[in-house]
Image 1 (tube, rainbow, N blue to C red):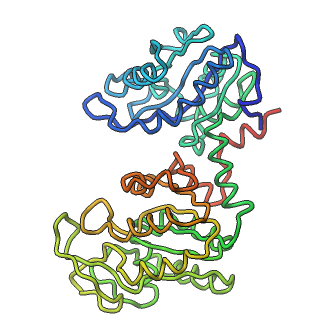
Image 2: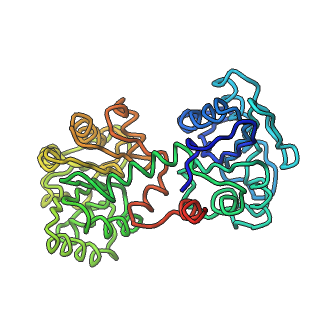
Length: 387
């Protein structure tokens, strides 16, 4: 695929699809991480002498209807602050014009009817806004929509932006040519949401370490009573198949040996540690225990590459975050190349102040999951199909 870094765009209009879907509260941005991740591409375009039109969605407005609470005005203001220039918002496609050296933000792309259904007419209009279309929104690359897959196919010139390239390169180091041993650490609440990931990774990794509700389902599949814990009874057979496949592939699949339990998931609960075979019938598993942390420490000790998606406990509610924090610290101190993907695991690592100790922090939850499932992202496929 073409890469933006290689193109001469002096005097041209560059349209950049970015993921500026930042969390908002009462009209204010509460976390500008995605804006900060997008800015280097904008600066690169300006340094190359281009005019820049930025496109993104924000939240979930009714498609085709303007809604002030989902306006990109606060985002444009934050970008303007960072760049030291006025960054106006274009309410419609006609108003989205820009001179070299300047930046304009097109209003929330979901205000335009046909975006989510990848309407070809809308895609063509978006593509026609500039001379070069830059797909740099990894977080939406798994959606075939008008401003992602559609516009890429219809633009006069389409290329991958630096952020998208860095994401794909990071996951290539995990999925295509990893240094071994390769370990996948997969957490989260449900096997059902990550069944494809588990099935794809089991044939690729040397070790598969699981936690959270996913681990509960695997424990239950072994006949262990998990008390009142969250697990998926209808996926016990799938869990058994994954364990059997792991055994046949020579892939280690360690499970928790002790757990932290409480009667309910609420802050300040009295928590206790139990062997997995002694979980009280009226309590739920909410974190891995200290012996399991040490077991997982040993499993991760020789890793050369690690991909982590999902926490191993209810880390946002104290006192059930010790396991996730311990694993984050283990990975931060590791010499392995560590890729962290998925909103919750990224939030945990950032909350513990350990993000800069990891090899790569992904900006896309759903997109990273689909890559780990072995799927081709629609926007990436569109870029690959271009001359």
